[in-house]
Length: 221
Image 1: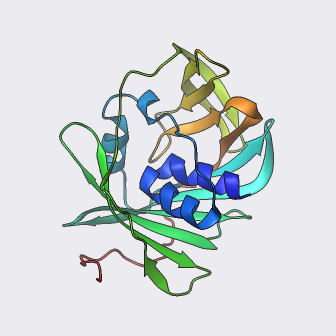
Image 2: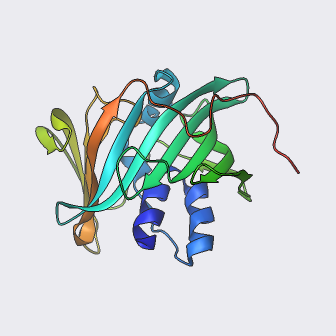
Image 3: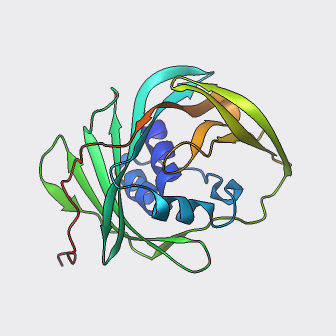
């Protein structure tokens, strides 16, 4: 379970994964943001509708393993864009929730400015990030890269998707399925080496917020 949590958090943003790894004693492996189209991640999030959400279920050999991750667009302020992440053993639950403040740059990257955590609807705490973290979009992956259009099956339905595959030079790679009609990240499914991955479970336009409406604030010392 701890490894799955770190994996899901790293999918969100590396700085958040580092905070989770420090508390679980596990270090997450890098995940392929460089496979997303150049500037695609920042553009999608900036253009997304507040309240839009997408939920994934972690899988092992194609079968759900009881961990769910929901991304929720929590609104924009003068500081940047707020994104919530919910982690739980059941769908639609924010048992463990994070709120991330993002800022986009001209090069198509996203800077993680702040991360807050809330457990079981309790007190909101600010997580220390350390060095500034930038999530790059686009790049030059190592290994053999393939691309094709296909239909991907998920628990939320079938989608016309762009399949991007990466075969690492020193071992198995991964497959990423991108569907334009999906909100936020646009990811329908990701298959990783070792049989792990995640798959779209549900999505929508009006999610509640685990932290309430975003406000322009400055972090406490």
